[in-house]
Image (cartoon, rainbow, N blue to C red; front, side, top):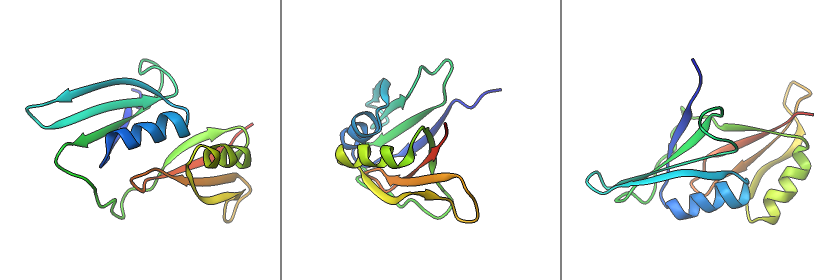
Length: 127
């Protein structure tokens, strides 16, 4: 077994694609419209779907925003330097909501950024 993807619903697909590709540096792997269902699926990630877990962005054409809820936590991305990643993301227009620093009750260096729909992305520093 292998983790394939995580799906999140987004209110504005173009805005979300810009964030995940231009700000976080992922690639748009595939995208398909489903006119009869009035939705679009776009898959983004750092590598191909055959060997990497990716994110499925689901855009329901008639919904502009979603309540994130209290059950969803975050998406995590490994980075070599969390502070440098925050600086780069900020320079690309991204929103840093927790600067790089040791996690509470631990020593792992983490940071958090937020996508245009309010989903949190954790940056975990790994050498």
